[in-house]
Length: 114
Image 1: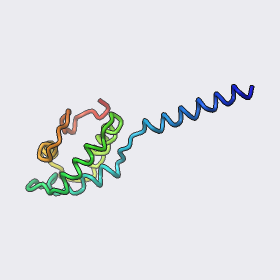
Image 2: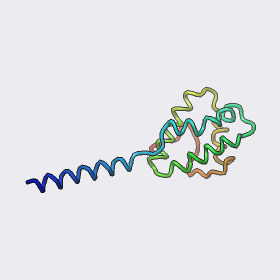
Image 3: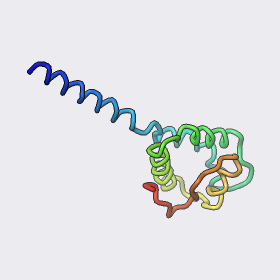
Image 4: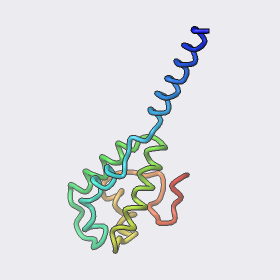
C-alpha cells in the first residue's frame, strides 16, 4: 500500500508543522532582554526609563497568544527569583506607567497556567 504510506507520512508532517506553529514565540531570553532596562525601577522605584517601557510594549506585542503569555509569565516568575529586591508594587504599576493594559494582575501568587 504505497498510497496509504504516503497519506500517513503527509498526516505526520502536517501534525509536526501544526505542533511547531503552536509553540510559544516568546522565550525567556526575550522576556529578560525586554525587561532588563526596568531592573532599577523594579528594585528602587523612581523614574521609568523610556527603554524600559519600550521593552514592556515589545513584550506585550510579542506575547499575543495564550501560550506566549503563559511562557512570559513563567519566565518573569523565574527572573524575579534571580533579581533580589523586586518591589511588587513597582512591578504591578509598570504596565500602567507604560500604557499597556494587562487583563490580569502582576502578582507573585498569580497562576501562569490560567
